Amino acid sequence: MPTRSPANARPAQAPATAQSGSALPSREQIELDIDTFAVMVRDGMVIACYALIEHVDELTAEFSCVAVHPDYQGRGLAAVMLRHARRAAKAATHRRYGRRHT
Image: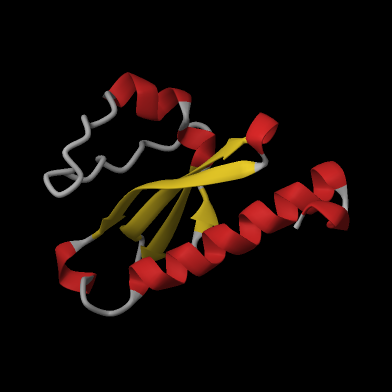
């Protein structure tokens, strides 16, 4: 299960976005947003990560910066992370606004 990164953790390198065509975030931006990242760790190594960026004013969240280590691709880890992100976003909405906004 993905875990939250501590604020002083070294961020995982952002994935290439050749498919989406969008620009990669800078290392500075990743460091500023580190608290939005969740990571999956196996044997002390980050094997997958994502960022969940909440847009509080719009009651939405963005699932982004998804990366899976090449040795672990094809195992459904991105789907696991998406399910985790959905639960985290829903829980954050409940904490902020109560159950009526789900």
